[in-house]
Image (cartoon, rainbow, N blue to C red; front, side, top):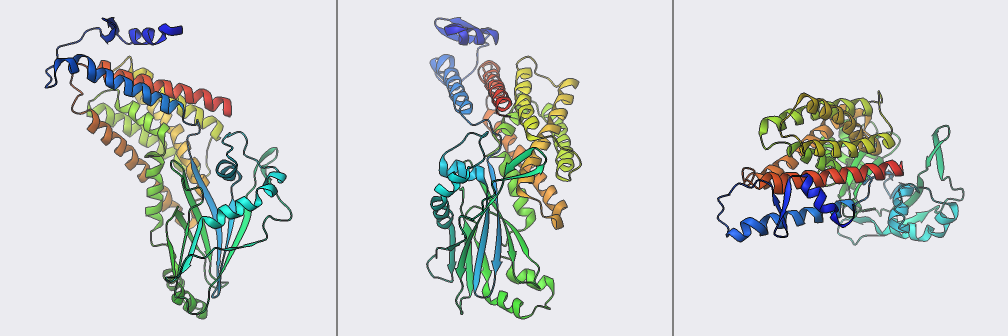
Length: 434
């Protein structure tokens, strides 16, 4: 298309060139309080340039939809020591320590692990904050790292190897008289990356373990006096043990609701663009509610089916279709401004696919079986709240100008075009990387 490509795209959307600047083909005079020069030139051009800048930023983002890491940690707590065994994910180590971001290369070679063993150990030790009472933080001591025998791949299904977890153990001594232990983790804590930790606290043979899902830098506080009392009384009721030594005060419901919300806002850029595509069809509330209702029902169905292990599609199929759904919805917005039956059916179908994408996050985290229903419901509620937040922000940003003559040609159409292009780019990238 050459140098005339932007001109052809703008003409295709109903713009005409006049005096060196593109303007809508049929522009109705608008009653603005701004000077006429701003009305005719500055404000619409500024919006268009901001849109192209956003396209450049979005196009430069990685094709992977989710940047969520869940590190499993086995915590063995006794009256005189704490031992943490981290099950390290190889893709996370490659990204944060080696600088390898190619999604297709997720396995480390044995020589690579042994060469970087000291760096890996130092990284983990420096990202674990352990301190007793008001004392300064103490660095944990290493145990059996790197393992004498490295296992780098496992096969859950024949012919489908995946990266094995690398165990790294740290140990701290707890002197007599210590009353409170505070622990926090910050591995892979970076902007745009959702680092979570699934910590299973083992508190003795006769005391049931406690599973905690914690976020980066979230403090886990343990009352050591209460813990020692539980150990001395192995016949104590389970409810008493749980209340005395549970290290995190937040509940499973709150944790999974937060996980669902943050998966949409701010981390789920592909889901954000899809919701904006639904919003931009029409500024009227009723068409939006119909679409959001169809989308919610659909993704709730497949989210439950996938999490319960009844039906799911592999990520290499789901992720490209999610990207394609963004493009399809945005492209249709360029030619229609009302909800037709086809639109409802398409949104419902795409919702089924998005639900499997949501389920991928929960499969990485690992749902606590004893609270499966609560965790699933609260994650779904968090997703809905995230979508409502996106819609609320969009309404707030456009309500003042949705009835202006320039809203459709200078705001709605360019935004739909940019969203469509982002969806197409991501579709191609995900197909090539699958």
